[in-house]
Length: 136
Length: 433
Image (cartoon, rainbow over all chains, first blue to last red; front, side):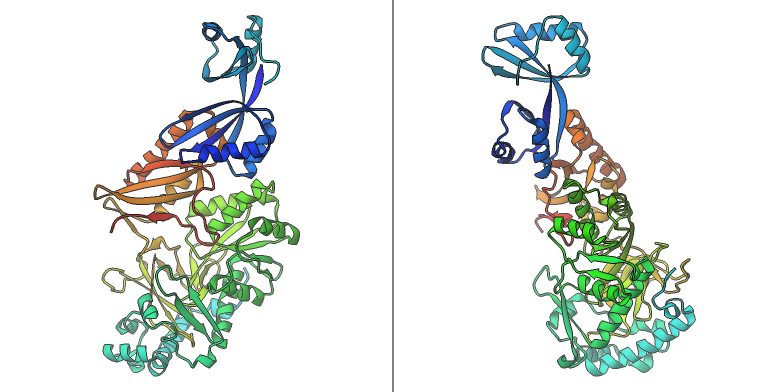
């Protein structure tokens, strides 16, 4: 249920996102999920990839500032109301989430959450019947 | 404490000043006879060697400026026949023609002697392996340090600038103990070293001989921490000779002039009047012993202060503070006078800001715009947007409170700012003049 996420600083400049994703593609790393948020002058690109440690090394060689953090991945059914069930549950167990995005894979949707207390969240969500994806 | 020429470097001031006076009188006569430009200048001012009775009589001699050297391009100010010139250097002419200087054999000897003094004062010796990471060529920095360091018997590695990863390999393999470079390149090398998995602190480099661009105390501290070395500054300019005009001793309380070769003064850059000892103003230097291209009262444009008391190291030669800036570099932003070094002092004190920043000035609606680009190097900032925004606000606030300047802060990709392996380009002025 816990996976590694890579966050990359992206300057809001023409072609910058393409440059970064090009580096990832050329190294044969597959992007499983992605979120880009931006302000007027910069953005943070958050990625779930198949080999985060290797990507971190590649980014460092290319002098791109990046950090690895742990995030929660939770499967929910691809149907109305599935997301709200999860968010309500987090509220119940008093886990704060900072941001979330979605990766849809086959029949299920997978929610990626950055929460304040990973282990406790896993423990309590599992107890409530939630599960993580087999593979991301 | 090591001296290259102890007798000269610790000469009582009275004797030193008598020597300077004798040399000044000789110089005035020498340029009067050998340089038509000076013959004319001195005649217009009514100055002859006989009229120089004390050192303060120098005030009757007109100043020489960079424009004078340019106007006589290339060899107009040379005082000897071209056959006696054994070396030519030129300073980077950012606008138009470069300023050209020529050296006789004697000049090259004096030059290496001056550099030998400052490198020993900084703590270098024959035990050192010194890597010179200045670009070789017309620029005086590299060859100046090169010959001076050879003179003290150090092992010189003329690796020049560029190819930073190779520089690091040489440092590691040769066991380099001292580094000659600009402060910004020294810092850059340490960043690249870390990128390729080498901790600069584990290398042998224990002494930095930095020059050719200014360095704030905060930047120096960052470099010292990055490398675990002792950083010293030295000062010079090609018009006067190159490096060797002045340099720091281990006390680091100012850069000692080689006062038997260079006579310094401080003037008010606006009015041209000589300021009393101890005041801050523009540095003016007379080359007392140069044969190739001697200069009378050369206006350096560097703003500094001179101290005449004897240093704890025993040297009696006067010391200059690090220049706070060049009278040319002073920026007037939205009506506020500020040196780029003052902005650097503010930025470098903020830990999340890389030592690399750029000041960008522009014009919008007839008004100055003032922006600062800062490289985001701290990955910890990426967890949360709030952190990046907090940093922007913090930088803005510091500049506002310390300098009274209202800046727009842009966060940019690391290593995206224009960087030179020589001097860093810190200010981009796109204002409509």
